[in-house]
Amino acid sequence: MKTTFLLVGKTTDKHIEALVKEYTERLRHYLSFEIVIIPELKNTKSLTPEQQKEREGEMILKQLSESDHVVLLDEGGKEFRSMQFANYIERLQHNGARRLVFIVGGPYGFAPCVYNYAKEKISLSQMTFSHQMIRILFVEQMYRAMTILRGEPYHHE
View 1 (tube, one colour):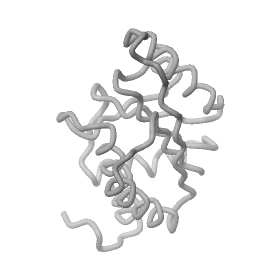
View 2 (view 1 turned 90 degrees about the vertical axis):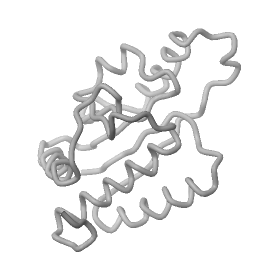
View 3 (view 1 turned 45 degrees about the horizontal axis):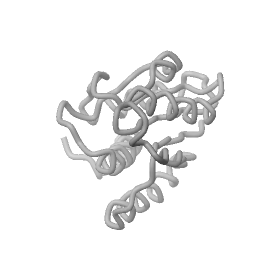
View 4 (view 1 turned 135 degrees about the vertical axis):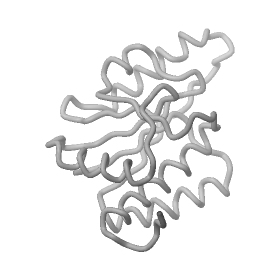
């Protein structure tokens, strides 16, 4: 199964970009993994947060197909310990979907149309992180999950 990490907006921090690239390359030893970046909206000062979410939502939905299993990274989602997350990923890989898509929304979250499209939501923490930091946290946790599933010594519990 192909796994896609869909992000709204690119990062401008070279350190974050380097870490995301490193873990993405590591992940590709275990599964088909790609990062897709949706461009940030321009001239957002004239838009309300709801209008911005709706426009981002339209761009997100254009990247998805009906056969995708869509998971939103959302503060209201289910939380996992790393071992639980690995088991969750393993279950998703065997659910029959052609593509597993994890999505990080824009600064105001997701439009209702995106929430309606998604199969589920997960949260990486009860704490709030920047959209830039979530990129690193997610790809590292995906890598950790793969090493757990393979019985490799990266994770210690």
